[in-house]
Amino acid sequence: MLESIRLLYSTRLGRAYLGDSLELLDSVPTASVNLVITSPPFALQRRKEYGNLPQHEYVDWLALFAVKIWRVLAEDGSFVLDLGGAYEKGRPVRSLYNYRVLIRFCDDLGFNLAEEFFWFNPARLPSPIEWVNKRKIRTKDAVNTVWWFSKSDYPKARVDNVLVPYSDRMKRLLADAGRYYSPKKRPSGHDISTAFSRSNGGAIPPNLLEIPNTESNSNYLRCCKLTGAKGHPARFPTRLPEFFIRFLTDPGDTVLDIFAGSNATGWAAERNDRRWLAFENERRYLAESAFRFAEPQDDGCIKSLYRLLMGHETFGVHIESTQRQMNLWKAEQGVEL
Ligand SMILES: C[S@@+](CC[C@H](N)C(=O)[O-])C[C@H]1O[C@@H](n2cnc3c(N)ncnc32)[C@H](O)[C@@H]1O
Image (cartoon, rainbow, N blue to C red):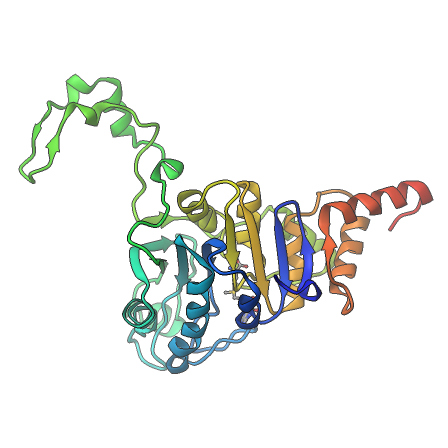
């Protein structure tokens, strides 16, 4: 089992570990994880504050983690990898690194590509400035590739859990099917039968996920502001992991994020009744991520919790019971924390 010394905090359903996930993965029992979903540091040309590798070393580096992920994944488990695109250094030419990762993982490591997804963030700012804004020779890159890998041909998956609202057109058709279409074979060969006019509670989602990355009013950001914490610079929206958690796991299953950052994955898992593990090697990011689980109670408690988690000696904080204790102590002593 995972070493308790690395456990920074825990919640009702999850455990957040501080350390290099390459090492932490070795402590995870074989075939015990149903979904690994993660967003690694990308192979960007400009180095970000949390350390990105140059593109040529990137695929080898990421493959080291993927080999270990294979062992911890259940046979019907999934591995979902969010990778942002990049340009070659100094050239208006796209890097192929995310496709090289895909091919390496499938050809050499044995993963299947169950399906490719594309995360469209309409709120993305135009970049790189040189090609997009100044010279105006490239469009805004607003899509990340999200590879859904599996060990078997039939990973656990339930589309019914992620149905999206019907379009207005489809709603009109469902309300008055006879008026809009008659069952027959289409020129495409598709047999549009009467079943088409039956409501299934929602439409099957496409593999293009439109999710703006514009979180602005969460407890996480409020607490970051309150404590003077900077917050994680490259968070994905919680709706992204939430889609795959609902699609690819059942309540009670275990979800792991090996590059957890602000632990958007853990938060999405917790609120969907899945167990979760989060690995992150920067104490600051992991300490701040606890804000996602903290009761939005008084400011003194939040500041004390943050100070506690940032302490070099601190490990094993249970968020709910620590907050309860702080409240009790505050009430007994009649003091502000
Ligand atoms: C792109 S960010 C992930 C952000 C996350 N998806 C979120 O929504 O907040 C990648 C994270 O991986 C962490 N990281 C990089 N190498 C790591 C390693 N070997 N072990 C654990 N964490 C690592 C970085 O500190 C960074 O926080």
